[in-house]
Amino acid sequence: MDGIWQRCFIALAPDAATRHALAAIEVPTGARRVPYEQLHLTMTFIGSLTVARCDALAERLAEQDAPLETAGVTGIEHWPGAAHPRLTVATLAMTDALVKLDWRIRSLMIDLGLPVDARAFRPHITLARFGREAGAVNHPVRPNPNLTARFESLILYSSTLARHGARYRALASAAIGGEK
View 1: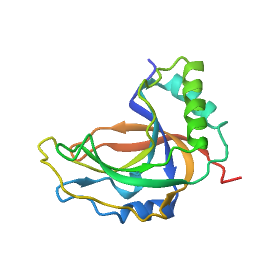
View 2 (view 1 turned 45 degrees about the horizontal axis):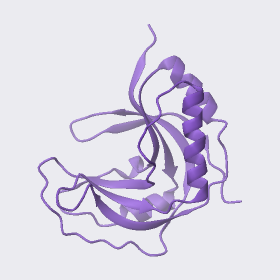
View 3 (view 1 turned 180 degrees about the horizontal axis):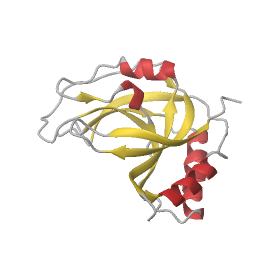
View 4 (view 1 turned 90 degrees about the vertical axis):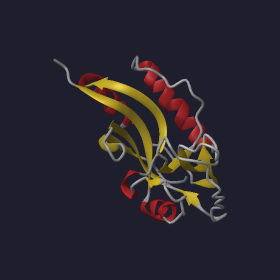
């Protein structure tokens, strides 16, 4: 029987300097910070994948090497809102390169007969998560206006839910070319 990896997604992995800068951003008391090594920008959520489909996707992802310029961090927000937050995120500018990469990944998913996430792409990196019982937060954060995000790879991850939050495991990756 072909095995299944649950909760797969494709994400951009930030470089070390970007991770350090994001990890230095203050998050509200009571929020669970995303571990440094798990910071990422989700490009698309997939769901369950068989090993065969995962292998096919991994092979095609390896062909995705392309220039990806830096993206400016435009703000720190509490989603869905400060009254009942679930996440604290760093929002990023929607660059042409991110739009093109989103389109290429969606096209790749369609070509492989995989489900395509119907939600609009909103580039962000989750910094912290709140428990379901979290109350309102009054924690305005203004990022350094010169803060930019650089990415080093496009990764196919599996996600396993655990008591203290999800844990991610890289199943395949492709290098992302620098600015050209």
